[in-house]
Length: 302
Image (tube, rainbow, N blue to C red):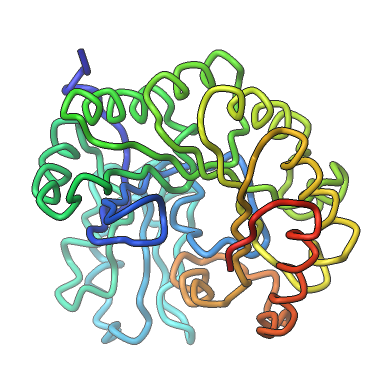
């Protein structure tokens, strides 16, 4: 039986998703990720801890937040409010957010119990219509494995289809626990070359690939490749990824075109966006990659 009192940190729950597993899905975003992808569209999910997000366009420069900050982490300058994260991370009060009447400062992430999450999920059950369900995303669910697994357990007790979106950079013991309660794995392969994978994400891919091999023996897997022009979209990498999937009886690859929709979040979180010069791949380029992958006997969906 699921431990409904188990706590974790989430940063969003979205209803009515259609691209993260079969049918209509509820997406639960868990905070924290072992990878640091240069193009990450959800930088607010990278750190496990709660953090402050600053919207310059909403700021009136009243300095009430600076006065309220007991950690002395906030300072006002020509670019608005700057936040010293080393001081801010120690603060549990978030008095600066309460003092900001214009909501220029918000807290990203909140502590929730499995019971809290299930309350939101159960409201969506009428939309599933037998095919839909719940997908855990992030961040990466494996970064809060105990919390994630208890959510999956609770879903299975309600006969809800379960899926996770993950890079599966975790131990084999944790992989086995996820296999027990997950119906579908959507797993990212950023690059097949371990050194290039490290350049793109901060980690190598050996553990990821080994985990995929094991998972594919027990559960359906859809491999997802974010297409980053000039970094991982070359013919050799695409063919090697397709061959890896075919060899391990993985019949489908989803290719995801790079976009900059998350770029504004970096400024709001006081982070540097490291790929401003990269443009989204054109449709003809995505179609070419699709043809390459399908030439190796694997279904490819853009």
